[in-house]
Amino acid sequence: MATIDVRTLGEYIREQREAAEVSLRQLAKNAGVSNPYLSQVERGLKKPSAEILGQIASALRISAETLYVRAGLLEPRAGNAAVTESIAADETLTERQRQVLLEIYAAFQSENAALAKATETTAPEPTTAGTTSAGASTPKKDQS
Image (cartoon, rainbow, N blue to C red; front, top):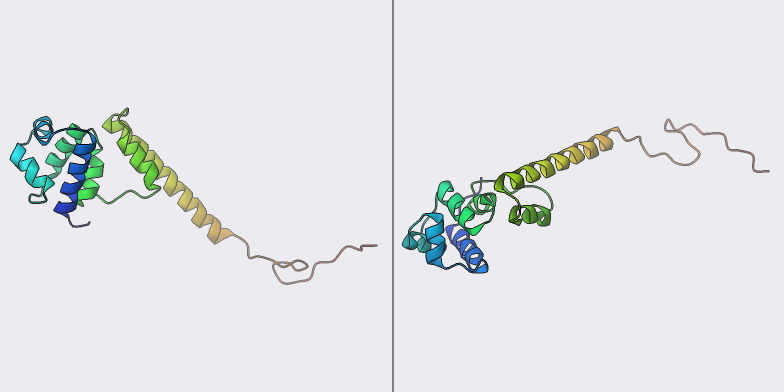
């Protein structure tokens, strides 16, 4: 697991707060933390717990998973970042719906990767025209 970079995490939280056009005081109130504590988190002076990150994510209406990954508490998901970020950021979905969609996406990726690997290992050796895979010549048709 990655180590937490509190400064980068704090900057990300501040960017999300500013993008949502929410004041520091309002976010602190909505997240159930003190104004000074949230300020210290944003400045990279405090390392928030997973529970606090979840509260902040909920107040910002972003995926808690996004903050957990930024904090180094979770490994980033494999796959197209645009897809996973779009699902995680979709405000029309509940947290549970986002999680299920990301799990389904990951399952499809795993299935496709396994299928590709199986295809690679069972693919026949390439043959040259006029020879079989055993190397014997094949009869050519009379072209007259």
